[in-house]
Length: 281
Ligand SMILES: Nc1ncnc2c1ncn2[C@@H]1O[C@H](COP(=O)(O)OP(=O)(O)OP(=O)(O)O)[C@@H](O)[C@H]1O
Ligand SMILES: [Mg+2]
Image (tube, rainbow, N blue to C red; front, side, top):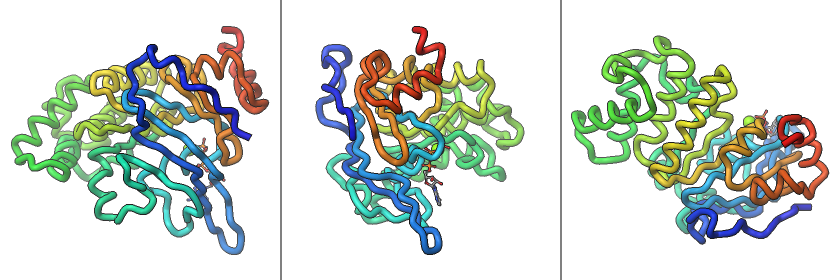
């Protein structure tokens, strides 16, 4: 059963009425030999422009499978989508022809992951990789894309961007690589950013910096963010709304403060109880 709460007070933040992304009754199955894993079952979520929706839940609860479905990035086979729709700008991304979806990927919807090396090409200089996104999605010339890529590296707080521009991913620290991936994701000014555990691989102090950076850039560009994290303290600090997933289903969703202060679902209570700092707050 899903515990859905009334929307938060709209005066709190000027979010649009219409969701930018709307996932309705999504199912994701993985067919493994003769058995089928129902990784995601009847999941409905939405994100409005300018807001952050956090998705939490223990390992294997279907968070990544849900997020990857938005850009149809689950490996297929074994993945199939037995039910649901994913509406973005009035288009159902689950049924959009691959060519049209390709134009949305990276331009309107971008993703960042825990491990930047899943996105970065080890054999290509980082500046070229950021510029490549612009060359692909806009009519920019090589020189214009280079200028914009340098500005993007600067915007994500990379010192001496002209030097870093020429380096390869292995020449950068983990924190800098994460910033490069964020620059790559944000350089085309996407309207929606999907961030799947974007900081868990980093030192605590670097985690803090990267999250602060994401929040600052989100406000600056009025981006919508779907943030997947294990860390409920991060949710409390950065998200407007939260969806709690358990065994492939959304068991509770609502305003972060409401859900954390008055969890309606037993599983949410268990999750909160496992985070002493929040429980005490
Ligand atoms: N490519 C795949 N092939 C087969 N099964 C998969 C695949 N990807 C995910 N699954 C299964 O789907 C279920 C949900 O996995 P998912 O990766 O979405 O969990 P998660 O909530 O993101 O977990 P974590 O917090 O560990 O990242 C799990 O049972 C997982 O084993
Ligand atoms: Mg995951």
